[in-house]
Image 1 (tube, helix red, strand yellow):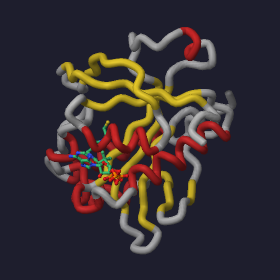
Image 2 (cartoon, helix red, strand yellow):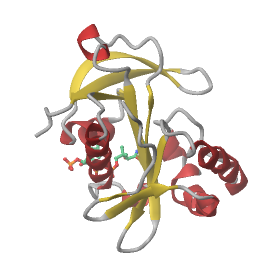
Image 3 (cartoon, rainbow, N blue to C red):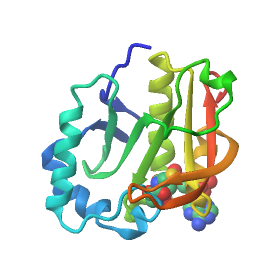
Image 4 (cartoon, rainbow, N blue to C red):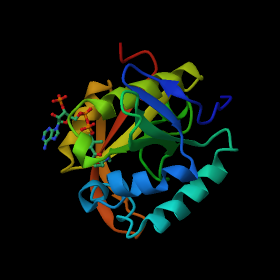
Length: 191
Ligand SMILES: CC(C)(COP(=O)(O)OP(=O)(O)OC[C@H]1O[C@@H](n2cnc3c(N)ncnc32)[C@H](O)[C@@H]1OP(=O)(O)O)[C@@H](O)C(=O)NCCC(=O)NCCS
């Protein structure tokens, strides 16, 4: 697959675009500092916007790689950045069947939205757009996993056409194990 990298994607209500360092303060205020959001993510809540700026500095450097995918989710109407969505190679050791891995290595979708904007369909809209982008670029399948108790994320995956495949364990960056449910989606099966 020829990776297209993080290019701008437009949907009905959203623009998915590359982050810039100028997004640090808004990212910190809108979701990165909120333990209720990061409770379900691999990383811990940031303690200051400087930490967010350091994180974004690394992200921005990676955009030169064609196989790097990390979008800021911006609401068209307000211009406010409300969250992020990414695609990344899945954690090694996940037991995906050969019928899938023969089509390509596992790439995993991840997303988060600031609490103030939950339950407006934004994560679903962003995931559907990234899903279509991936399949349009030649990807054959995608996966995702969510912590067992993170029911909202499971709802997002199902609305985007993903199917539950197996239960397992994922790891936070501090090494903590999180029981999770893994989903997959094959190109052409979400219509
Ligand atoms: C998961 C998350 C991204 C969802 O974002 P969102 O923009 O609110 O998602 P959507 O509005 O597109 O869809 C959420 C769905 O979950 C449902 N939902 C929300 N909370 C729920 C709950 N406690 N129990 C059951 N369903 C719930 C909503 O009703 C909605 O489904 P519906 O449209 O069928 O009603 C957001 O909650 C979030 O950022 N959480 C913290 C980070 C995170 O968990 N990221 C995913 C890691 S796997």
